[in-house]
Image (cartoon, rainbow, N blue to C red; front, side, top):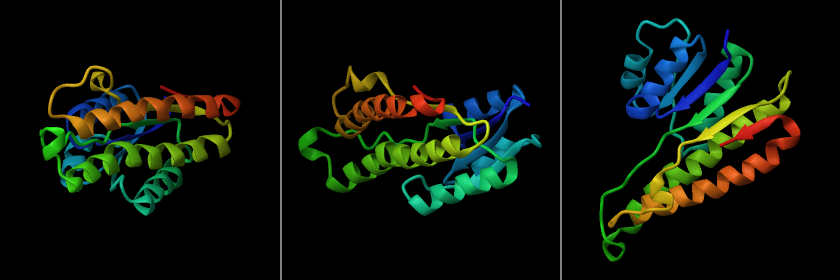
Length: 176
């Protein structure tokens, strides 16, 4: 067995492709996302997929994801922090506070909550250690017009990643 992974945003796009690639490489993969039916489509045909509907903006939901993964598979070796929102394109003066909060809650707070739980699991398991991959964007450094929320969160995700990487060194936890 290659290991145990959690992929957020596994119901579509990059998350689905990453989850299927990990499954194809022999990993046990917990598929996390808001839409259970989409997660089931990703899992289709794999005995090593665990479907866990999850709202990454809710700390209890994230805790339940990690608890279930550890109950079923004993550990967490990899987190692919992929869940995200782009938000409605709008100039900064027209970007609503509600839209801002939704993008920040998903892209930044959701990534933090998942990384925090992964860090705790990886630190406490035997053998300890693991890998956290935060899905960033070129927009963090080269934004496009009308993407204030997305750009700000992806830029912040770079800082979160660097901080986790430093904190994880003593525990065999890498973050990139």
